[in-house]
Amino acid sequence: QDWTTQLGTRLSAQLEIYADDLGIERVRSAGSSHIFAAGLGDPDVAAEAAAEFVLAACAFIEEMTEEANVDVTYHAGLSSGSVIAGLLSASQITYGVFGDPPRAAMALESIAGRAQILVDASTADELGPDWILERANDLVDLRGEPGTAQVLLGRRRGETEPTEGT
Image (tube, helix red, strand yellow):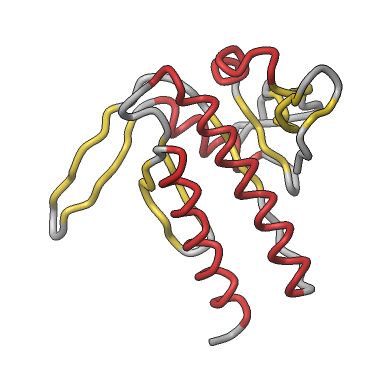
């Protein structure tokens, strides 16, 4: 196995552990892209679980790539709202989550900068003041329109001590 396959396998295994711990469902993994859904069983904790998950995943990527002395680019998008989840069947059964939030999260991920986690307004509202967010500047969506989002930097611990962001 080459180093990219080894790192990918290690990352996928760790993502599954984080997801399991936080009650998050893996929706799809393909190559270097992973899609997870939080709150399918309890929407009241969805945004916080998703934020904890993505921060842990990004910190793990940083740690893993530093150990391996390689440069890996990653970015993420978070969006909140109602979705439909189910099984599709054509030639094989496939699990999927559908609706505006998955589309918005993928669009945010596609315009996020290097090592950046973008969240939409609904997710920022759900996260509230316990989280460190800052306005993302100079965003342009896939249609060339100005984009609005916030960058997730971490979670506040106590009054002045934030968690390390990515």
